[in-house]
Image (cartoon, rainbow, N blue to C red; front, top):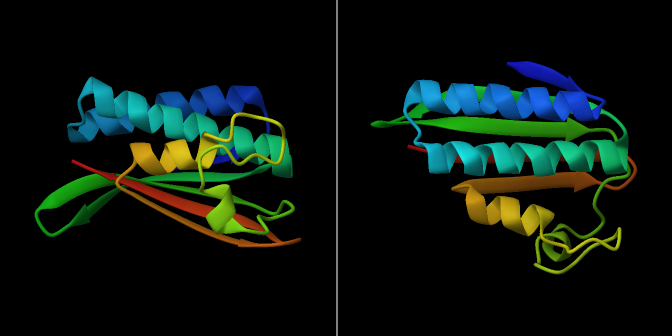
Length: 128
């Protein structure tokens, strides 16, 4: 499923869709909430830093397991120092600096690729 992210309403719709998909494949309420929280953070970052972008949510399968994969892409300013951006407390917008580090903690896998001036792609996975 792919959703264009441009407004706060898109964030809300994305959260709902992700929770439904997570529930459908067997995630409990705690993991559904973790996934929805990560969706909120990543999509808010799209609106805050890049104005618009795309969110893809997919059910994935690997040997003997199922999960959910979340991909957020934008063509925003990019992240100059990914390692620093993943450290708790670091913020470029005077926030708490817990967004990306929090997302990393809530998911089983989180990969960030970014190029300054071209955009960012974040892939997060949660396994059952």
